[in-house]
Image (tube, rainbow over all chains, first blue to last red; front, side, top):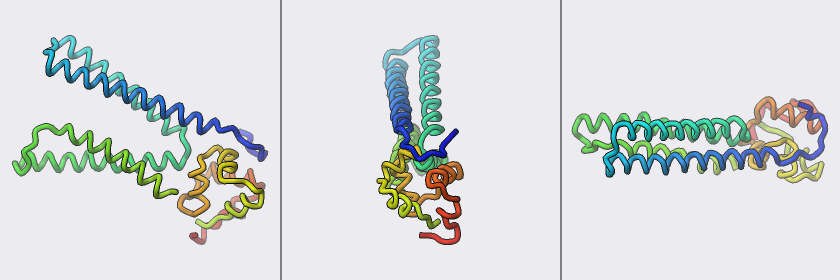
Length: 140
Length: 66
C-alpha cells in the first residue's frame, strides 16, 4: 500500500460501491420474487411437501446470497457509508426484535388481535431505509 | 474534532471531489470531516497526513470541537 504520492486516484472505490450495491439489489429482487412465488405456490397451488421443501431451500439460498452480497458491500464501501449503514441496521434490529416482541406480548395478552407478524419484517426494512436516509442527511 | 482539512485543500485549489478521489473515499466523507461531523478512522487519518505530507497532529486537533 503506497499512498505517499499525491497523484489523483481513480474513482475505483465509487465504481466498486456501485457494482456491489447493484449486486445487493439484484439478489434482493431475486429473493423477493422467489419468496412471493413460493408463498403463492404453497397457499394457492397446494404444493406437495417435497416441492415446498425444495422451494424453501431455494429461497434460503437466495437469502444467503443477498446477505453475503450486502456483507461484501459493507466491508468494501466508504467508511462513512459503512457507519451510516451500521447505525441504520442497529435501528432496524431494535424495531424488529424489541418492537416485534412487544407486539407479540400484546397479542399473547389479548390486547392486540394480531396473528400474523410478517409486518415486523416490513417495518424492519422501512426502518433501515429511513435510517440510511436520516444518516445521509445527518452527515452532510 | 477540529481539523485543517478545508484550509489545506483550499491551499492546493482542490475541490472536495478532488480530495475524495485522492483519498479513495466519497465526497460526503470529506465534507463530513471538514465540518467536524465525522472523525476519520486511523487508516484514513494516515492517508490524509501522507497526502499533505504533515503529521496527524498538525492536521487534527483532538482538544477542540468545531
